Length: 511
Image (cartoon, rainbow, N blue to C red; front, side, top):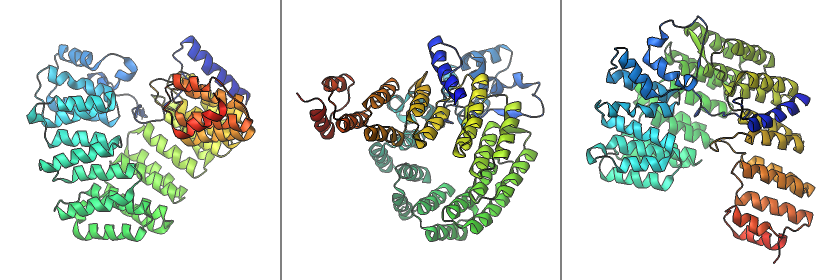
């Protein structure tokens, strides 16, 4: 507990003093690249490799344009396919801002294909938002508005769960006869899975069949996944049977991965492990992602021996072990409650990593807290903030949830405050469930002071919404207290008024 209080105080001092050592993290792969952990030394020729230079920009500073111009001044002239490979790799590791800077190709009069415009649109959406992507799309020449760019915009709408815009754009594509491939349908099915409406997926599958559009491997996989979410394991097996009977060439390792996941969800572990054996047969020797799925899925069957076997094989196949591989293994060990194995693996990663990835910190902390090992969790966080200037707000949230479950609200509030300190770009906010847990406690305890402090933290995080105000007012009502200035506060904060909020306001600040 004492170590926790010291770290919380340090997080406040860090923010006030402007130090580069932040104590708020981003647990999202959207923001962090998977940095490799090199076991067998560094490549002495790495500086001559263009992609290596570009991928290092996050750590070294500089811009893509400067790097490419320097590369040319050295007498090297990258081919278009080399630049395209760099963009592909930067996107793969979610370095979207750097990938977007490859607009340098257009500036240098390197011919842009329709696919290049589609990639650019996707990157703009990821870095500047949907409105900017729409503007880019509408500003394209008529010839560049084709199935590639329409498809990219549709994908953006689907990822952002913008159902109405997605359906309208799909209808427009259908009228133009550029929706005759599986991809637009796959995007819409993915949309409905994100919207937690798996029952919509079979409807689109039927539309594809009615329109004689062949189902892709992804189409079959998402169909199986939707039926699994509907607890229809017989339906999953029926789809798998159709696929292996009619489209056997489309059945790859991802199909067996989906089948195994469905069996695990249904509690059919023997069938799941049989599917995983087929996955190993289909995956090929150098598919790192397949190894990751095997580790996670074997953890789902509670088979520690197979998890360890796959991990050993992965490290024998690949010369380097990426942060992502370590993360997957840590999560598996945490799920299996192998805390000794987790501790050993985390220490191995810390000793060898070239880039400190706070996602791994969160994986270790979460596992320790799940087992009430608070001291070990605090040590992990303490060591992490000594080494990394990354952000740690997901780690602080893990501590916050731990204290919420223990009903130690004072510590939970301190952890929430530490998560918010130094928060940039509003990348994180407490979940609605956690907000409700806090406010329900304050209401039950009639603790207006605690509720007000909590709302002030939410305001600092720019996530004080009408729902939070409703919960605050319910605490005032429970405590039998009034707040004459509350209406003015809500208006100044720009919270949208609704009937429930109005009724509560009439009780808390009667005119």
